[in-house]
Image (cartoon, rainbow, N blue to C red; front, top):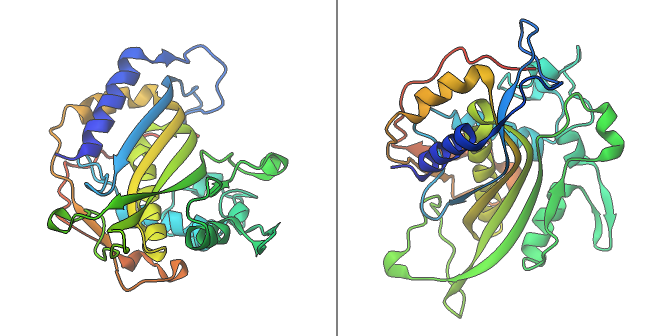
Length: 301
C-alpha cells in the first residue's frame, strides 16, 4: 500500500484523538455563510517520505499531480504572483481585480539579492549551490519576509525549503529509485549524491491541502535533484499547525476508513537538464489508482 496513505491516516487519527479545538476562540477564517471556521489542531507534526522507495501520492482520494506541479512551477520557475499565470483556480479567492496576490510566493522567489558570488534570486542561488557547494548547510529559501507581509493577500503557508545533500553507496543489483528514470552514475568511490529537503509549513489544512503540498514539493525535490545530477531522497514535512476544519471532520473520517492502494510510479522526462525547461508535460506517472474523489469540499477563507 502507499506509504503516504499510512502517514496520512496516522496523522489524521492523531489530530482527531489528541488535537485541541479552537471552538469559541476568535479565529480569522470563516465559512461562506459567515460562520467562524473552527478547527481541531495538532502542533508540531513531522512526516517523512523517502522518494527512493516510492512517490508520496495519496490513493485514498486522487491528488491532481500535474496541477500540483503547475503551482510549484508558478512559484519556483515562473516566479509569478498573478493567478493569470496559473492554471488551477486555487488562488482565485485571494487575488485582486488584476489577478495579483500581492508580494507573496513567486514574487519573493524572484527578488534578487547580492552575494559574494554574484546577484541571485532564491531559486537560482539554490541551483548554484547544489552544483558548486552541495555540502553547504545553508541551502534554503524563505518566503516569510516580514517587511512585505502587509502587502501579501495571504501570508505564506508553506514558507521555507531547506536542502541537504548526503552520499550513498550504489548497489547496482538493487538499484531502482522509485521516483527516478535517469539514475546518476556512481563516482570513483562507488557513491552518488542524494538530495533531501525539509519543507516548513506554518499552517496546513489537512483535507484540502496536505497531500497537495506533499506531492508538489516531492516533484520540486525530484526536479532539483535531476538538474543537479543527484538522486531525490527524503522529503521531511514539518507542520506547525496541522488542522482539520470542523465541517471537514466527517469527510476525514470517511477518508481514513478507506483501504490504501498501491503507490503509483512517478517520474520526470530524463532529457530535461535545466530547471527552467520543466513543464507539466515533463511529469509522467502510471498505475495511479485511487478511491473516488470527495466532492464539494467547503473551503474556509
